[in-house]
Image 1 (cartoon, rainbow, N blue to C red):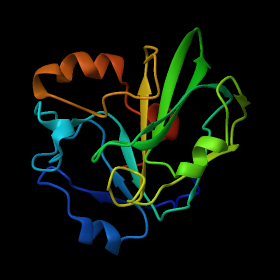
Image 2: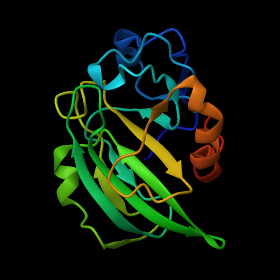
Image 3: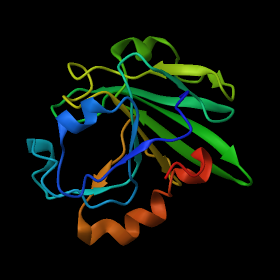
Image 4: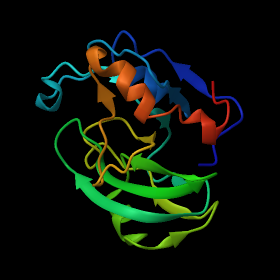
Length: 183
């Protein structure tokens, strides 16, 4: 994304404030943040509330770019309330291992911008941010998450329970390792 140098860092530990998010042009939701009272749809009845990605809040339609050269491995519309909506996963090769990146809360048109098996280049537009009516009901943003393991589908647990936090931190590394110091 072409985000500004300085981003508003949201504190979502006390819940989701759509009005505050709408009042900012750009913002960041933090990795490994416990977000109490935010996940209220049946999808989260299991108590998941620790965020495993970084959210980049922006306006709907904002272009999303690949952070490096990779291959599209999964496309999916996770269309349940509270879920990602249109989602893609790209496999990247870093040093001597594979790294999978999930791009979630996209526009429905994003699912036609790339195809499974397609090679993408660093800086190539691969998607765009979706609106609330297609991205699970959230204010427009990109959920960006890394995984050291192949998720096997166009989905990853974007939030985990506190009991699963330590194991999840081993599987889902901090996205700032590829995005830089966003906060």
